[in-house]
Picture (cartoon, rainbow, N blue to C red):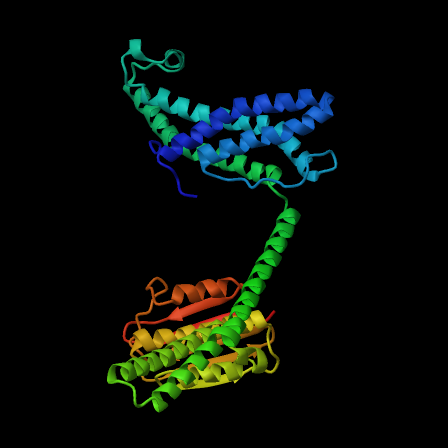
Length: 386
């Protein structure tokens, strides 16, 4: 824990949290005790009391305590934890406020020991004979030590209060585990839905727009070959339209292939990555060792990683060769992409690596990048198989 300085804003916020927390805790604790005689009213009031305390922690400590989503009832463990906090917090608040007040008060009294008698705080007149210079020096040293100690006490008591509040006002470990499991399942559903949507788009483009472009290119090619008696401007227009149609068809095929190639579904990663490696403008050595196929979502992520990495190498690395290795070890899929280019790749360099990292994170994978200036560059990705 970093020791705050006495004059820092953090010290005053911690002190304010502790000192204001005592009357708030006493008020809410007293109301909790009084409302025990009216259980329905207590059940409605406890979440509001908890909301006040959460606001205090967020305002002074910038700490957010996640709310509990279980219903407020006598059978809810969360309700009993909240009631327990409101009953316990006055004692925690009293101990913290007393220690912090004594520390700050002692620091002020000690540091004022050098003032003339008429300006002295009343306690000094009854404790020491301040006409003695040594006594004044000792008193000021004690005051200085307390000045340094007061922020530490304030931070410690605020941290203790926050720890108790997180335990009693926030969700329990089991509730957090259930929430994490729910979020994990929801994220998996979103990823699967997005993957299914990409497949649908790929299928629609392949069966619809791509076929129409093929037909258009064939008709223009036929017209270009047979209508030789047309005026020169017309023949040039047909030729230009034919070339544009072929280029558009090539770009559409590349786009569809990047979305989710059909060969990935039919034959798996080995065949799909072989096509990507063959289309690269530099030699690519590919090694795929997968005895048993992984889930379609993980296959799509691995394909995207290799495809995007090779695209980045072609655009930015000035490499003469690359190597791609994909292997499965038990329940993990390891992907490695290596190139002998100029290096210097960074996650924030705008070369698509951030998109790779986000795609890997979406399935709880890990990505490691090694790219010193001058090369080589290595991208290692570890993905769960399920």
